[in-house]
Length: 187
Image (cartoon, rainbow, N blue to C red; front, top):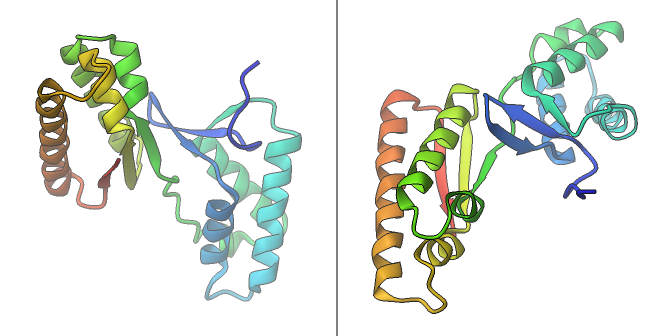
């Protein structure tokens, strides 16, 4: 059995990207929707806890589609007579985290081209799925795995630079094609 890092299900964004569903994100989403309405903040926070409880205790899967999650939240709000709050929900999913180390594991040592193909697919899936923020992490462990190096070497420096250049180019392309999407590299 695999233990998830949180009792909440992952949120599927696009065809192949997942984001962690976090309590703070749910709370922020609902309090922002209630802001400027007749619904007090405490009520929005209480509804957020109700959504969390449902996802933890009654939702059967470990992954929920972004659209399905927002549909369920809207239906819940509407059934409580809060359709005006449901209409204000920002349907931006939480940040998508891409593990570079996991992609390098899937590609295999020495298969940089496969790694870059997998990374491009993950980035495309996240952006077409509506992600507003993408975080890539685990660069150093990724480089060591791809290069097959036990100790950091000049070969590792070159590969790290190639990956950084690829991600920088992707950032520039995103800024032009999807200005609302941010890409961050977390070491």
